[in-house]
Image 1: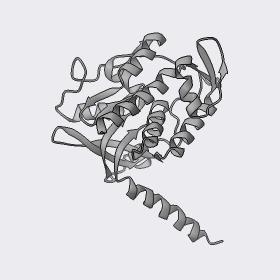
Image 2: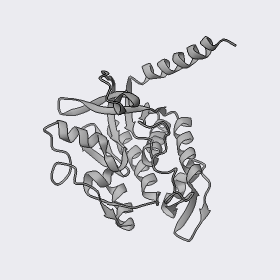
Image 3: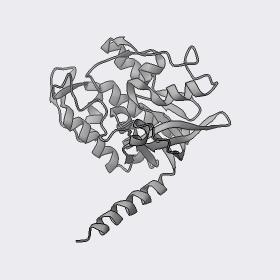
Length: 256
């Protein structure tokens, strides 16, 4: 065993995959539930999809369950997505399913990767590539460099569709809106901000507001609440899963 051979293997295969995804069909920023579902379903349809996660561990807010308790809830309407990703659940009532948080997070991660999506963690999107009235790619950097404010120049990835799946922070849309004199697809032309918790309308809105906010730029999951003024919903995840499904259908249709 030579340590240098271990290093060569890591570098060789990482660089191989990075080169493959320098140009892609879709870049999804944020590896939470909606982003993972959307990535998996798009990859299953033959799209080249890169998922960029700024943290070490993908899965978004799933891992903590509700206040650290180990289960989350989904609605019956989202059961077909759990089945498709082979995620076990228990029936809590006629309306709700109880899902182990670790099983949901790990199942969605593995399901997305198994279907062909490529996940790059510790990768922060710090800006977008914009030209001719369209978002055309992302500007990326190492998360540790960004966290420590190191003056290190970024790299770029070109893509046909960028998705803000960053959750409550809506980092991508927020940066895009602040840096550019543009009008996005909201009543004010700017992000409206998230409202307080009200689960039922929040679950409906997160699916309905999964859409293209600017040519080449989409939102899904909790980013929709921050962009369109929706409510937060707490530890119920059916709307998040269905948002990812809607995202895949929308982008696949738009890309043609």
